[in-house]
Image (cartoon, rainbow, N blue to C red; front, side, top):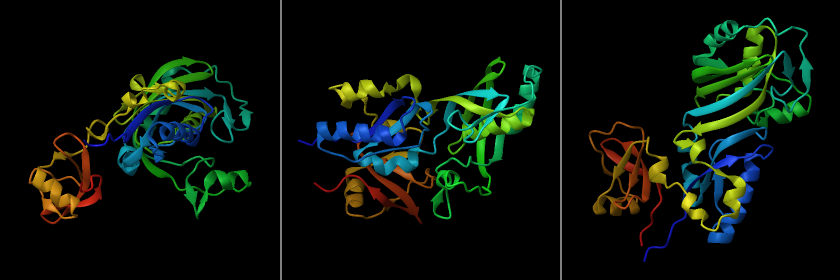
Length: 300
């Protein structure tokens, strides 16, 4: 009988004031208690002052995080106008603006938002984990160093105004991975001429993972039947190019050999599954063939 594989993904609703690392450490402890395995990671960091969808990877699925992270994100963002923050969020040093926000109308906000829709260049906040010359920006910031950070290309598909109740603005944002909501709040405040910072954030979706399907961290850690929460790779990768392998193709891949490339597939990679939906390998093109890049099923 084939051993049960508890690899896959957990859609965790991360609570406020927990780092992504905190969540991984707690899940790892529980995962090890119940399965004996301890390989746990996450796909896409969420700041301590943000809540919502955090994708936790279990077992062999930790080798898939790079394919899960680029999924499109959805956020509910609360922006405080009329003040700025050293970290661009409520965790930094707050400086109240001398400019009155009472004269800002919805039409002004809508106009200010327009330049941020589409492909844009966005400068990450100094207090971020991006590395420059081998050091994380937040380490440099805490040491009192300030450097020029090169803007990065991101895509913002939509920004919808949910509520404007001076001085708080609530937005619904759909964007690419790598987009900083803190930078968006800061930049929007500059565009309006009153300053702003991110006062609250909830990630509502990351790729195929939705907040409505997530599980609270506390619930997860106390469930005996936690395994029913695991999202298998064939579901998590449903929006990717996938193929089903024949027995002969599976045997070749398990031996490190390439298989014939199917004419209809022009993707830079494909995810190959067995007939019973177990992830067998990640394949990449090699001329007229698909060669194994990562293999997940060894020979029995």
